[in-house]
Amino acid sequence: MSAALQPVLYSYDPEREAVWVDATPFRAHVAQLLATGLTVPVIAQLAGVRERSVQHLAHGREGRRVHRICRDTGRRLLRITTLEARAVRFRPVPVRLSRERLRTMVGAGWSVDQLADQTGLGIDEVARIVGRGSATCSQLCALKIAVGYQRWIAQQEAGPGCPAVA
Image (cartoon, rainbow, N blue to C red; front, side, top):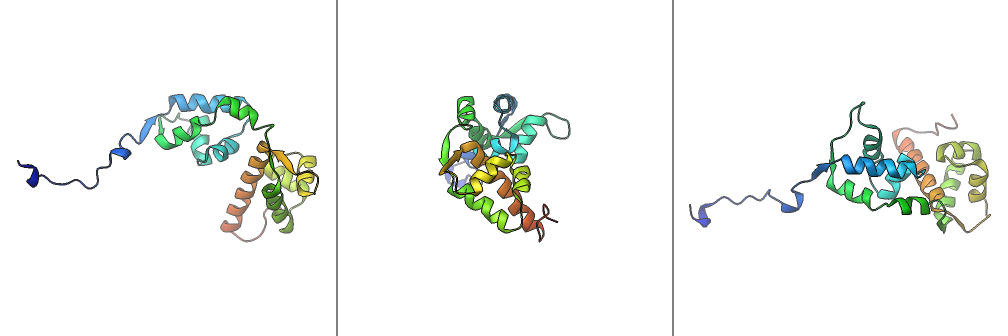
């Protein structure tokens, strides 16, 4: 068969070959990140992947271990080293965006106690960030606030009202 008569496969994309990879090393990596004190939502936020993907790697899916994951998800998770995971707790970042997010939630009727529960931070830390107390907070605080804020936005999109206040 000559080259001119061969069909052209437009759907073939060499970049998409082997999209799925073995999950074993990534499962171990997530376990190491969890051992440093990060939570599943914070790891997902830091890596830029879905929380459910990290949850499945950490705890399995319906009691069964995950055997394969998307190559891109694995690549994103490996960008977070254990050294980075430890540094996140102490690295100062500007507080402005975190403060705006918390103040938006306060404006919607959330109390400082509810914000602390939603974000996993202490009441004093939330009060300090909401107030004008400092120009920075730890990157871990900022990540936890981002996770809490995104969950609140998702709840808002799912239905009206503030479940924490109701």
